[in-house]
Amino acid sequence: NAGVTQTPKFQVLKTGQSMTLQCAQDMNHEYMSWYRQDPGMGLRLIHYSVGAGITDQGEVPNGYNVSRSTTEDFPLRLLSAAPSQTSVYFCASTTNLYNTGANVLTFGAGSRLTVL
Amino acid sequence: KQEVTQIPAALSVPEGENLVLNCSFTDSAIYNLQWFRQDPGKGLTSLLLIQSSQREQTSGRLNASLDKSSGRSTLYIAASQPGDSATYLCAVQADRGSTLGRLYFGRGTQLTVWP
Image (cartoon, rainbow over all chains, first blue to last red; front, side, top):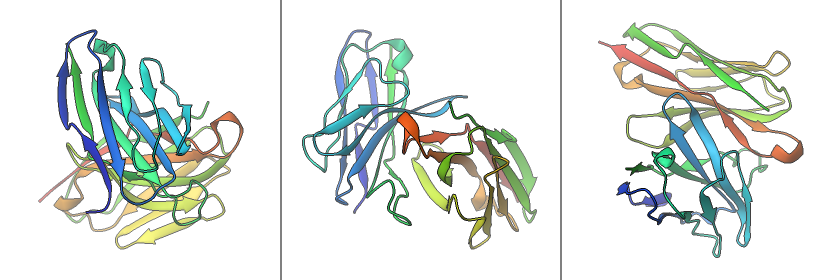
């Protein structure tokens, strides 16, 4: 099925461990982004990419790295996990931010991360 | 910085009622406003998108309005059903400056419709 696929769905880490959240889309979308959702905080943008080879920071980028080597994939790396990074992470994509009628974001199902 | 506020935070109503969910934003320089639905443990699904030049959008029992100058949007749900139970989020897309294109989300309204 076409859409945004995130893996893993659940992950428990110890403080200081590193891991990568995977995000893949098969819709040939240019724009991809990562959000975190915390209780009472809404969704906050971590990093985003407007195309292969181009990434930029969002509101809360500290502690996270991204890369965009292909159009399809946009992995999010936690270099040294901290309890403050316990959250639900969502990846989203769209064809073009300013393509009228087609800039609705498609979200993945989310990855729930717990850092002990 | 753009701030998006949604009122109420939670709403519980009997089936059949007409509902109004509110969203306000502090910076009127927006490209569009979107309403999303989120079911527990799931991702977000886009319901309606209103371009900054538009006043409203309709989809089935849903109607969303936008008053850009006053920084407000409402989502109207007619004849609510138990299947409408979910969290509804509002998001605005920035129109200028260093935040060009960025989406800012409200914290959502958690809706429960009971039979």
